[in-house]
Length: 125
Image (cartoon, rainbow, N blue to C red; front, side, top):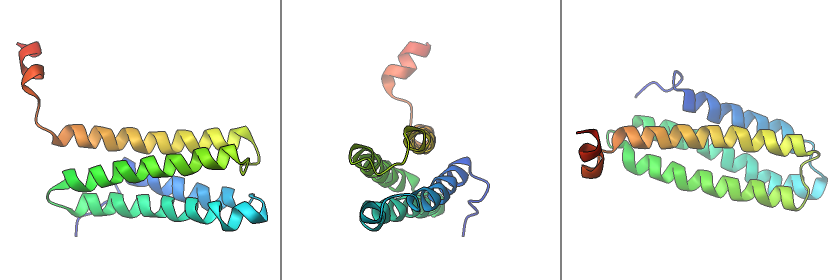
């Protein structure tokens, strides 16, 4: 089993999940048990997908699944903002920043696994 605690993407995804656990507690009762539950579950699933990707020998497919899952999480976050589940705009913006940080790290990991395209080779020459 591969170690994953040292990965920045793991630490940031875990921080995001912990943050959701705290912030959903401030949602109204209606949003706490509907949208809040989905947000909490989705953020925990993102951590699991990071661990899964790290354990795979062929990481590309697992990282693409993580990318799709993070897009779904962003959709839930936007929905929560639209229905005013967040108590403040700062709470929303902090969640978006944390999620974007995980997304950027996932994209970087994906790029590191893909072979350079022929166009990129010609530009360097």
